[in-house]
Image (cartoon, rainbow, N blue to C red; front, side, top):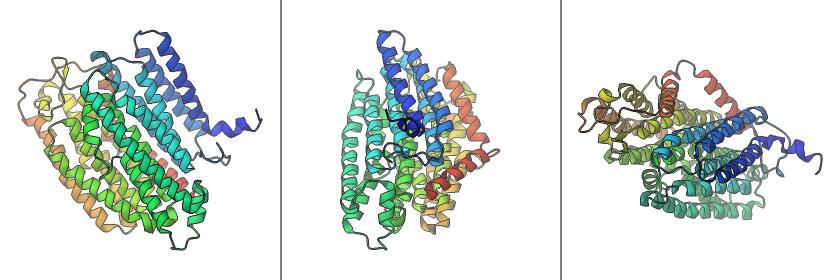
Length: 485
């Protein structure tokens, strides 16, 4: 081996470690021959925690080319990877009790999440269209299987099939866009693309614009932004609830950070060409998330439309195309992660006579049977609605402020209107919890791991305004690194 190879590979240490950990976990699961899978789950969580430590150590900026320049590390990638690892680890924690109760324990589940996480980390460190696609497909292939992990149930199998078919379509669109970009630019390297685009002086070939549109369409599918959202409600409802929780956090963080990296990185010089597309997608997502959720009766479908709306708000920051926008998106996704994980922990605790229920009306009387959980869910709903001084308010504040700085006044106003409309269905849940009588109360027992996740998420969401500076400063440094790079 070339002695220069090892130093050059050092920036990729977290990804290399996680791949090796995934292979080790796979062997542990196989050689246990059908034993309890809890060990594999907790080892997977430990692997993700160790990887987080390696990201903090090795994830900073480096000048060394990794994998022939296809892989880069920076403060931006470091911030995104920490969020991704937190989302994946919390999703595995949420799954342990569910899988045991539903007798669906399979050691492959945490292993697949580990490999999906590797793909997400590769996505945010991609410095080449080919590297971007490889990371995206590594994540997607693992998540297709995870969506249908309960292959003995029709809903889970249907969710996995829908996700696979539509995911394959979006991957094809993205790859076609990449091929058009390569055909007109002659390179797939982000730095090379940025250099070429800076010399166009507004004379952009039509084919290049088409390639960019197909690329944006593929990325919009991954963040479930309208009008590429069609898979989201069905997959959220049909997949096992811990899988839905995973889909709602880690892949969304990875995809929106990739969106941000691609748009303000290599395509930053072409902002006049793509900004209007992102604005339209953002407005459609915010509008659909606000109005379609009004008529939902299943809480997982409601969370699906809520997620579409939240991606619309995050895309407001992407559309701004400036440092404030990038910082706002990172702050928004940090807040979004805890709000969603906490809400799905509450959904997983919704059981009647040991049976999982998903109807919004099943929350009736929650304030009497589970007063602490009702308070936590109230905080999450108020935060998602953007009511101050909860964390969700600050997430929206930063992205709308960035849009105003960029002169996108109409977009910011439409975002505020969509936020007001969406407050209705969040407040409806609060009304049902506190003012409706339960026909059958929920089971009192709440597993310890779910209770712990609920308490931690509640504390972060409620107390964010007291000490926002660590997240805000880290997001600012990450955004500065992105814009500078």
